[in-house]
Length: 223
Length: 300
Image (cartoon, rainbow over all chains, first blue to last red; front, side, top):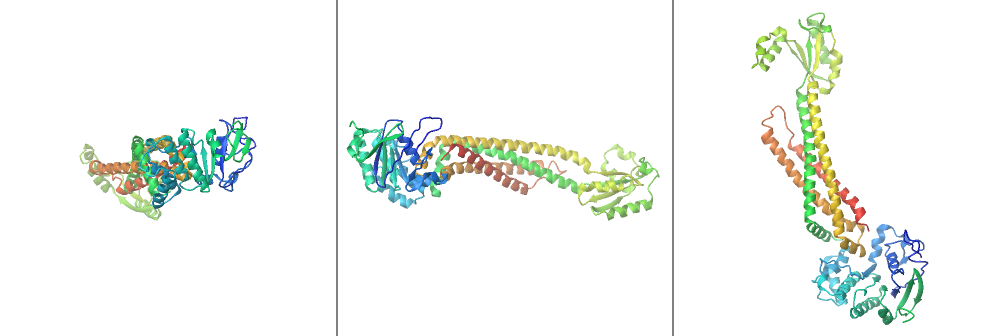
């Protein structure tokens, strides 16, 4: 599968051919501009590939019509470097937002949200605002929001990019725990320490090409 | 998405953007009121037409001793001619009724109409023409009478009172068209303001819409709060316009109608019909302006 952005000559992704199995934990590594973000955008159908096909949760994205894209995104939870929380809603409301959008009843929301807040280690934080939380805690809220509807796939784009190492470890433990529930996790990262520690599958991109796909890999050959 | 959640989001949106919400309501209220005045003036022209056309007649003036038209060259009309005209008139389908006004009747009416004027003293019955007063079922069908009787021996002039009123109504039509035009222009302005308000709201809430998109909200449910906000503003503006138009109606009834007794004025039914039309216009304009703007600025 390839992707070339309009007005660009060099493809952002060039002949990428890979498969991520259900329940896998995959690191996507590479320098800035290597194509990591493009890869994630393609999975969410925010962009369409120039050539080739993408299957997500068994569906051919090229055959997915525009109005069915939201349905795809409900099966894929997303977490970003900048958390993307709503500042004027409480933690509870931020997490509940997903369920509101998906049409859950208030009763279901009152049951699911505390459960997932407990999972991410934020029980009792429901009434606070994002600004009252540390970066690590905010990222936990973002993960709770992405996971509360139990999507089949969780995509994390540099989730530890804004966090210090101790907080990052906590986030990784949390993602690992989510992965153990059977959720496929795809995480793009720069953080070599984390990749080396986790020993999961590593896919390295360079200039839009897959230069390495290693089971139980480390960040770079040099260590 | 549940209705309560959507409504609470709408409430937050309206409150957060309070000055813009206020601006939209005021603009919608004034533009719908202006358009409403246009619609009411249209109704008023209709009422006046009904009222006046109901009263006007076609007069067929008959030849007298003083008549000078070619059809009167034989002098005063004869009795058989007169009877023939009356018979023919009654045979025409558009004629509702016919009555004959003798020179004595015409004199009496003349005296009544000009009783305060010196001219009344200088006129004698034989100076006034006798005539047939013809009431038509449809006042616009004057041409039928005109072609049948104009130039006929014994007939002096066929006169349509409607021709005099037409000039007056032409003036009223110009005024009405002006009012409708101004109303439509201001409704267009309101549409542009709604569109801009949504652009600003969409920009202010790009975080929320981004998150909604992220968690898989359909484009309809992302756009719905924006749409509902402009529709609520439009309905609020419409109720203000309805109040203004009702106030205008009360003013006309209490202050204007007692002074201008020569005509009737539009009734409350005209106000209700106009407000329903305005509600339709308001909803249509608000929805269209919103949907077009949303398509451009809240992409999913």
